[in-house]
Length: 340
Image (cartoon, rainbow, N blue to C red; front, side):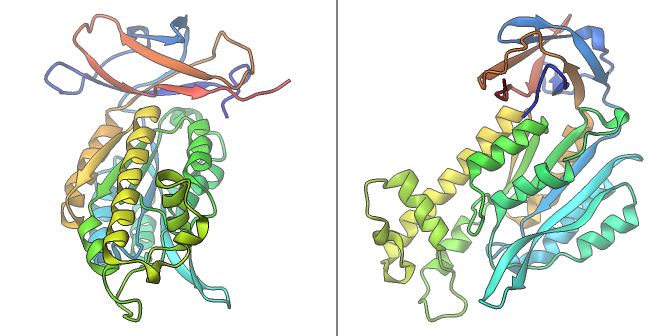
């Protein structure tokens, strides 16, 4: 969590005019920040031409495994859209054999670098996985990729960019804990939401004896029970193969609904955005939009005048002087850590 008596509270901001065009050329004196409606002094500022660092998460799980080549091409298009000095880390999923069976895990294909050849090689290494440790990947970004404070020139210029359908199947982490960890870094989250729902539904209806069929994992079934049928006995959701086709579809649709809500909430809270991609073929266009969006991002930082470590959520509001009709995307707030 951000400890505001000793650490900076970074606030990424994108400013648009009434027609949705980016407003560039602003300076620190153009911004006013409020925390819980109390004005704060701008302590740091980075303009839109400053370099940024991105954790690029590529979902290569069962719902997208048939089109890993398209994922690679979309990721390479994103890397090619970067500017000199921009740095990227590449994460994906991979399958490992632990002796008791194959499991999906998070793979860091490349740490933060501006070496384009190294990034292309990292993208070339991604492979399909047999599960989706999506929440674990979010936690890994916070714990590993963005664990260390940024260099001064990168301060407040970091982002998570994830190509995914957001439906976790195998993580040890849950959404709440992964979200809390990433919220503590102040990193905006951008999601390219790939629509895999119809594809998954078709394969869920297959017979459990069919190797080409998909199955909902026990963790997915338990997540459904907790969120949508909490009074049910846990044993009712232990065996996917005993479910009927309509029950399978109902569970799958609810999990997709939950995932879309989580991505929307996370992006709004952090000052990022969610971009819809009808399929992986349209993901390249979405990546281009994300690259442009992150490139237009200002970074404004402050040290809170409220020194209490009370664990409460603090709401952030940003205004731009002389821009009455401007529309802003900014981090909506953060939760203060508790302490003595």
